[in-house]
Image (cartoon, rainbow over all chains, first blue to last red):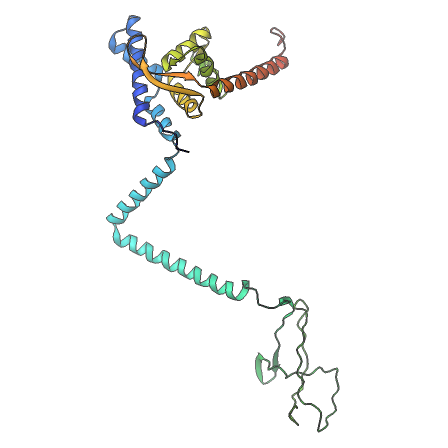
Length: 186
Length: 119
């Protein structure tokens, strides 16, 4: 339940120092002078600083220590050049803001699913004529040319029908006829 | 850690070898770092020389894994030293690693064949 007590760097360094003293004393007893014994003990040990660094790095808080150091460095840099930091912040904010706005637009238009069951079958109808650019069609403004309509006083002049075509099919160009309302629908 | 054939003939030992040697050394009683290094050197008849700079991080690692337990004490020459002893988990780990090592060396021996057959 409780976190195991972690050994401190100070304790490790004390152990290394104790080892060096012990080794030096042993070498003195073998006939070396104190100075030579100390130097020999250090040589036998190798790089004391490297061993201490290895111990330090073995502790799991290294990433946190690095993060804190990086934040301190960043704070010092900002204090030294506030104008530059402000310019960088403004550029980053502008860039990130634009990307977010573009993504919101793309998400709403391209990625968001429409609330219909067979979205892939929805189509858009638009009409063109030689005198005007393409424009969206009003709903009952097209007539299937395969149908023949007798022009009679009571014939419905407006056909209102919603047709669903597969969206993967090529765009069908339907010839339309302009109709005139002869009689209002019941 | 190195074998004692002079600096030119140093042989790199497999990683983890030092760990099993340390565990084996403290099996017979608590010992401080310098004593462990000396025991390995003497028991191996000077074939193995422990690099003291590698010894203490290895001891630290074994302690963190729970295979060794340590406390400060006084050495035979009245110096302050940190003594290590084997834990129950450490004994189990020693048995595991010793078996693994014996299997490995036996396999290598079978491949190499008896001494004198390399010609």
